Image (cartoon, rainbow, N blue to C red; front, side, top):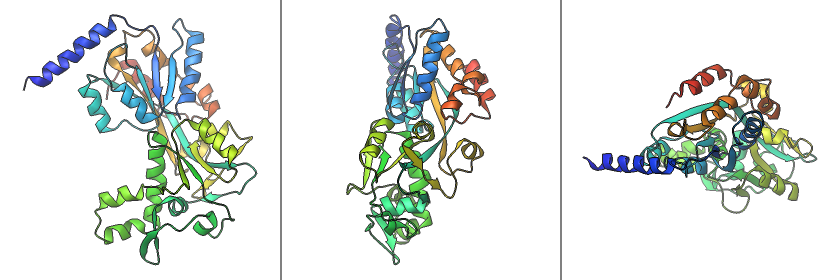
Length: 340
């Protein structure tokens, strides 16, 4: 029974030793979606306070949270950016490494867009369209068959002929999980494929997992880098369709157009109202043990969620972030260092 206490004590001793040579700047990593917002804040924070400019890296939500949960100490990051909530298994991994006090900060909302070349076809998508385009198997004449669709006109007769080539976020990105849950899973249900899987004897959990799979024949391409890689591929192949955050799209309006989803245009107003179906909150997570040890950490967090920065008239909204109507509550939570 004493082993866990000994392990935690060892972690604490290691953290104390590491903090003896604490850094003088905040270190941040994680979501590609949150990256531009965090980079803006870091630069303005460095220019307008006496603290050094925080170092902000990308890598994806899962990768950032993995680094965040490596432990406590100056050799670990202070903040993890995420385009989804931290998972229970990640909280457990954090705790096992001595990261027991985590502050969750919701910075606002973002939508996921389906963008293509500005001179190309104007698409009006539904989740069913994307499931029928990307699923390894689809329901046809009452039976699940290998997906025969290679052209968008096969998916939906209203679409013009255009080869299917989808550039979707890799599995380490939080955007991928939202895409799976709010597009592929919904499409799987709407087309009747999920019901057919369950009727065939598959458990609901296994059927749901199957609904989230994508074809591996080259028509669906995982993008493990950030959104600039997706943009480069879209420019190289005018028939491709990329999946990424609204803010990135809005900063490339000279090159791209966005499809509607479920008849709704992705924009600040429809995301704020919840009308646009593929939207999600954005977060960052703070290691409370680093507050008061890493200079400027709490100040950076407070600066990030200040009305002047994250409010509807701030620079983050100008870049594409949809301001959180409950921002005041977030500000209070950061001020109080309230943990999860």
